Amino acid sequence: MPCPEAEFYSIMAGLQACLPSQSRSDISLEAQAEGYRRMLGEYPLAAMKYLEAEVLKRCQWFPTIAECLNILKGFTVRHPLAVKRSEVLRRISAEHTTRFDEAMFRLVADDEVPQAWIDALPETWKQMAETRSLLRLEEDGSYTLRQSAARELAAARLARKRG
Image (cartoon, rainbow, N blue to C red; front, side, top):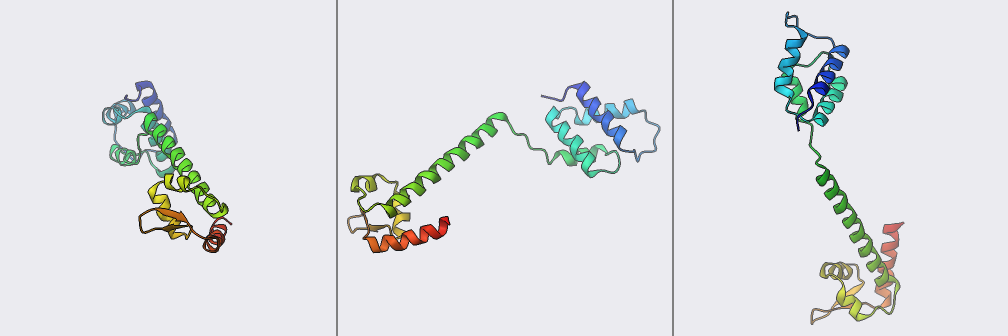
């Protein structure tokens, strides 16, 4: 949705008030503002607010349309659904990491882990537990809990990692 006209002209007026113009032409401010509106008016309000903030940070002079377009290349649209999706994916990842860490800790701390629980672990987790010397890969392709000495070594490594 394009920036509302009143908001657009308010942003442009604010920039004109804050930044001197390098132009020495006799073009009226209204004609200049209309030219900017034709070239930049299709951007959404959020993009225009981004432009305003960036121009005030970067520019010593009132920017040309080309400079404005170049600055607007840095604006990324963050659709509300995209933001929500990113947050959901971040939470899922955090939950997955927590469950993985808990599973590895149980393999280290518990001498009596049920075989059914080990069998129910995701295959990649079992492979990682094997590389950490927590599980042993048997000839039949199943994983079993290693003896305590190997797990004590793995526990020491895990403690160093956490601590």
